Amino acid sequence: MNSPNHASGQLAGPMLGNTFRWWHVLASLLLVIAVFFPLLEKNPSHQNLVILMLMAAQLGVAWNIVGGYAGQVSLGQAAFYGLGAYTSTLLFTRLGISPWLAIPAGGLVSAGVSVLVGWSCFRLKGHYFAMATIAVAEIIQVIFTNWDYAGAAVGLNLPMEEGWKTLTFSSKEPYYYLSLALLLLTLCVNWAIEKSFLGYYFRAIKDEPDAACSLGVNLRRYKLFAFAISSFFTALGGSLYAQKELYIDPGSVLQTGLSIKMALVAILGGVGTLFGPLFGAVILTLIEEGSRILFGGSGRGTDLIVYAALIVLIAVYYPNGVVGWLRGFVGRRNAVRVGPASGAAR
Amino acid sequence: MTLLRVENLTKRFGGITANEAISFEINPGMIVGLIGPNGAGKTTLFNCIAGSARPTSGQIWLKDRNITGLPPEQCAQAGVARTFQIARTFTSMSAIENVMVGGFLFDRSVSRVRSDAMQLLGLVNLAHQAGKPASSMTISEQRRLAVARALAIRPRLLLMDEVMAGLNPTEVREMVAAVCKIRDLGISCLIVEHVLEGIMPIADNIVVLDYGKKIADGPPAQVSNDAAVIAAYLGDE
Image (cartoon, rainbow over all chains, first blue to last red; front, side, top):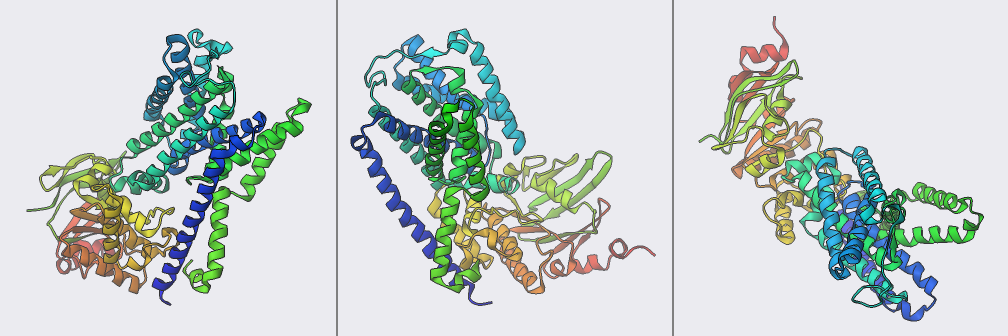
């Protein structure tokens, strides 16, 4: 046995140090570019594409809290997205409540409903929990499709009264900054969770629930907490969508495909990683929009086939997501640099 | 004053009686071995004390608190820690992070919990592996990691399920050293063990189960000469 002390020190030290600095440089560079992007790129359709990426990333980060960190795969997050969009829109259009209050209210409604749903659904484990969340999302979609006060199948329109008071704009820039701010807020909350005891508890619940339980972790309480936080931020994303499009209906904010997309963004980027969903959102949005532009004209759904095929390819060749692949890459590079000692430690 | 008192504990699964009217006591700072042939009901009894299974009848007292039928997380809060037959390591974490999960039960400060966890890793001789991914540790290391993790909840009683099974003689010695250090901290240990060589030299008391019933209870020397125990292990004439 040759000094394990030495080898493990080398493995942990430079690997963590390097990735850490690497993230810092990349993140601050991206942030600077993100802040100045609308000033450099004036084309509204290009701006819109980046807004779509930011919004998808925010939903992926929110999904990751419950699905990635805590390992409770919800495939019904569209329900909470839609609940957020509907709550804020109804409060604004029917009761005249400012979006600044209506949007957080939508988040709270969603978080509340997610606690009710989770209370019963968290009795189920693994795939069965995922199936239950799909069922719940379908039920909520049916309710809103038939609920006249909420516009039923016709949907709801938001009035076009431009300004920060109503959070409605004719240009793209304000929406760009709103979605960027929401993404940053969600990332900050996710980061704070990851660094606190909650991050440890969530990962423990995901890895070994029985062991977590024996260490005094109340499984249901922390699963519910992860679900509620995730649903809250998913709902904020839904409300932002409503403010941007000025029109919502069950087909746009409550459809199953949306739930799948939120999970895909996180899974393709890197499950249970802070920045993974950012990569996932960029890739997925590019594939989605690109295949639509290139193949969408046929009207036969060719774009969706290409979209699905590319996702299958990524899932097969990069099962750990982009961040997993990058970590493997950085790890291998360090292993080579440090020499055979760290190889032995692995 | 006794630390753990098990009174007339019975556990049935349908028509099968896994534990029948078992009573015994553990004093503070004691190492107690729970032994018996395969299927004797050791793990069931163990699960009842740890809260993973609810006894059909009977009571379990920790000091003056009745912990009968409490869920595992409340048993942990009351002061009962446990390890599992398979290590159940948190594989996405490093060694020290595994221990920290336990530490958060009574302290939510990450930095304090981290330094406490480091001390516990030292106790089980894993301090030099603190940053290592737990998934890449050997079985023996993962067993000791599980012990450190259980100690992080600051228990009064530590339950260890087959903690020495499948280890080589060197690894058994390391584990025995760790158990003695834990006892010296004033924490009582209840060790389920299938292999007698590891537990007999260090135990203050041995409880022997066979077919769900307690057939002997006493110091190792006395128990190993007990006619009923010999019959259970070697068979009747």
